[in-house]
Image (cartoon, rainbow, N blue to C red):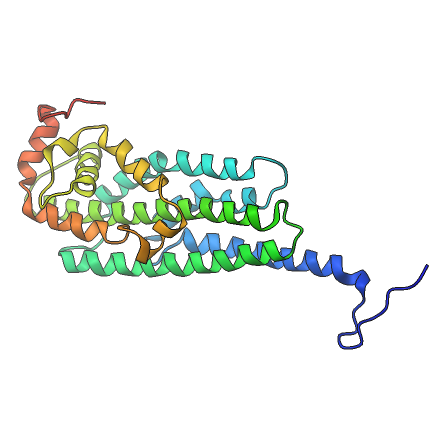
Length: 269
């Protein structure tokens, strides 16, 4: 049996190729894990909120590189299950510790910081997935890498959506406090959902319905990689627009409608 012949330029041999591929995959995994961590800790989101995102999505990186069938399905299932849990936590956060947002300019600046941070993390994740596919030991190779890419894009969309929700909810609470209107977390949750989903210049009373939250979550989960990036989506620009609607709306009346549950369609679950 002939011995492996060292490469005259590098001193390596053909016998080292599998180890090199494994090393490339290990580096890709490390880069992917770091990118996920950065994605789940966007700039401008408080540490407590970032920690909650990590708690919900922390398994995404491990699932993406875990062997066996169905890994993409498992990642997507986690993405779909995450938003309600995140909003349960976020609604209490904005009531007790709203961001320091007192005008629409502040909301726009914060949203811009978050968008840039998420975009940078997504760039790092794409490079990691390309490296993993090139290592050729990733089951399914480039095709699987593209599928994971789309699933991670959905994670980014949910993170972006949560940032918009945090910005909008915080600004809403500040405005309600300034107007002397006391609300609970359920009322803030429905008002914030309505401000984000409405399309006109003011908050649509019909959007105060409980079913609005499901529509909002579906819009986050339904977005993929392109829509998750700052230049490809309304995400990142949703909270400044919602803040403008809040400014133009009669918040006292909207709160009364929620409490009476008497507005058009408000009692739909």
